[in-house]
Image (cartoon, rainbow, N blue to C red):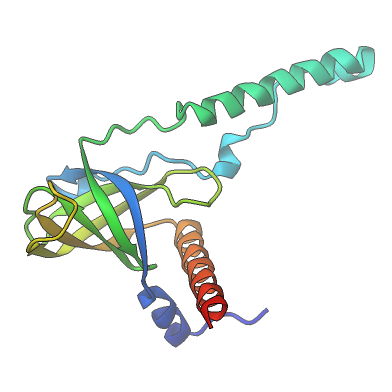
Length: 187
């Protein structure tokens, strides 16, 4: 498989798609205070802790213990107990690219403000991406819906796991394919 060149990476990171989703975030006083707490999904599903002796002595018992352990992990995922970070603020995500995102917020944020964001993309496997970013744009909105949101914030991602960036790119391409399909159906 061919590795993308830097030029390809730049183009991929600037493709944006519109999306509406709630986006929780915290405002950090100092970029050094950012600590990623979300683990990749592969590290959440640890090997069940059961003895190999159980396998040899009673395979049914070992199977039930293993099943019980896996179910506990699934229940934790569904109840979001794995995510321990608390977010104090929330906005409305309006578009995303691999290098940044835009969201609506009720208060003005100064350019250069550092945020930690919890991002969950719709139609993707469950998982909250923990991303740090810097406010690069804050524009007052004039009229239009979304009542309480008075500002549009542009955020450049400064700290993101490579796997999370690839998931965002995959999501963007998926949305573009859907839009192309819909346009073809109209004609």
